[in-house]
Length: 207
Image 1: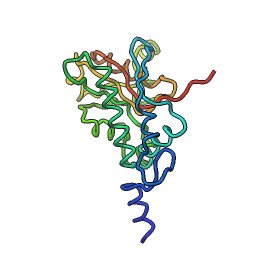
Image 2: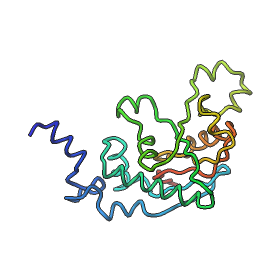
Image 3: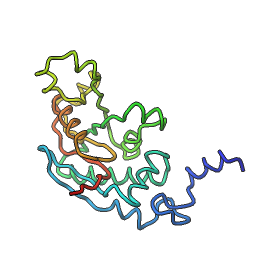
């Protein structure tokens, strides 16, 4: 069998666990269990929820979905995302609009897809994606304006959907939390009420 075909089949029907390499599993039960918890903390005036710590097998599962597009890993992360959103928004009458943190252009070119978009779609969520404010655009503003303008903002075409809406800010992995804070600020600047921020995994803090 041609190598490219074998690799394609390996993505669609992986023969080993994306997390630990156990045979005959897309994601084995033990690795899937790493995404079964719900952790919540309040930071910057918003609750942040995540399922797994981004290391070991959980990190491998996230990378299998994010970098390889493996179906079994993607399905698990999408289900995890939806569960977290439903939990943090349990008091809401309807599922909030998802506000996605944008991927880098370099990452999108390399992968050919945007992981957080795929997860939101697989999770059956309505979503919009924030836009990155270009450095040149920020430099043309005065210092005071720059200090009060979020680095991530709502696109003009999406403004009517988000103004006054209840939203959940979503990303795949949180590292320091700075990007989530920028996204929350951008959503709030457009008139949204941010219910929570949700990621499937968070990088462990040391020290």
